[in-house]
Image (cartoon, rainbow, N blue to C red; front, side, top):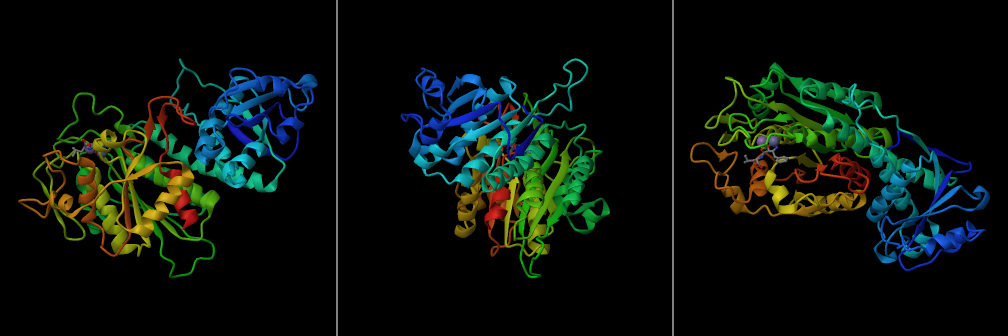
Length: 494
Ligand code: BES
Ligand code: MN
Ligand code: ZN
């Protein structure tokens, strides 16, 4: 949509976006812009409904105060949240792009006052929305489609506080966009080594990056990664990133973020059939979200708490060396797993990440993010990610971060009965119960065997929310980067 968004203190914008609430006329600030009555006239037109994202254009005389004013519907005052603002601003952004505007100013004061939405939260949402809207991945267009030049957009904003909020939102969106570009990158390019190289780029932002692979994986007994990745010529690895705040106390415990990073999920020997394999390049999106969060954390948020990221990276492929149904794997924490289905591979690599986190990172809390089950898509669609967290305090923090990011999570249960469903007649546990009951919960129940009881832990299943089928608010068809902004907000609000 836009190639680059910049913020300028002064200047005459080509367009002004004025927020209008449903059922309310122009407010005092908006009226100041209406010397010739063209805004009032536009506000009376039928398309100016005030519904979220509704648009009416006004063209004031002699280009004062701008050649074009866009009246943007923000819905009812009482339901105006950062999330509705993200949706509405995306609608305005599409208009700005459509009319090839290269500079814009936002006049939201009247609406924000009436709605009692905090100015900072609102302008962060504006920055997020425009940042997310600006994402395109043209890297794989060739000589036929060609590369489409994207215009630049300058936001004119005089207030230092609002500029700071806009920049915060844009930094969060940039993190999400890092995740989206990686998600979009096809599996013949985004191999395990490629993901490690992408992670290493964050050392420029001050992160420490380490890649555990080959013999080191064996030494560290990372059995899930070794086995799931065995059949691929692209070797599995555990990618570890660390962000340390400038003035961290030596004893400060980190938040540990664990991401499923399956560069491709063919299902392995339990091969995916009937079109189920297409799109499995996005089975790395948990790890991509974690990497995107680290980008926003290191570059923009700079939280007071240390953060460690663990990307459990492998390709679930097929060869004569593939791990099989019936194999028994012994994990680092001593738990033995009977493999019943090689397509339930995400939990096996995450188990390594969780064991590692508990044994080596002294975590304040662990949050794992994964495109773990098709079942969560059946249960919650693309509206909510599944959340499992029995620690009230951590759950509260994750919920707050979710609210701030507008990345919705819905709690699902983790009762002992579900953990019992994972018991094996041969080993300790199975990786999937073939009875197909409560699939997304089985995933969480399996993972619970790899987290020490006294460590607060949250599991997010993003299989339904990591991508959208068509234009949706600030998103276009494709990856959403779901989790990147939520996790960055979690670190910010810790
Ligand atoms: N990567 C898939 C889950 C998935 C499905 C992600 C759809 C995104 C969209 C996962 O590894 C998987 O194959 N899950 C199986 C588990 C089953 C074999 C126990 C599933 O959900 O069907
Ligand atoms: Mn699978
Ligand atoms: Zn998978």
